[in-house]
Length: 156
Image (cartoon, rainbow, N blue to C red):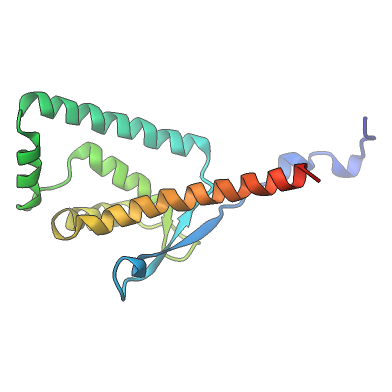
């Protein structure tokens, strides 16, 4: 057992985990687009919120499918006319606003991201897919790097 020092009392309690950001270059999708910062070490609770929201969206999709045999045709029709994002989907979009930052200091405004996603819904849905998949890839990459660092340190 290590001796305790009054100097170190409360040290661990005072440590604050910093937000770690990585750059998502939207220019990889299309030249001229800016980069955004992605918070790659969000707490488990925040990631759990995404799972919950996703469950709601999937449940809604199953309900719609039961009502509409030709769901693919219905969705295709939504892409070709201006339709607002479904409410549950808006909640997921707002969730992404909490992970994205223009500069790694401030978050984007949730309403701004919802309006942006709503616009992409009709103009360029693949850009939205690029942003969301890129976000998850950066989070996974950060976790994999942290795991590799831990494994390397423990093998010494």
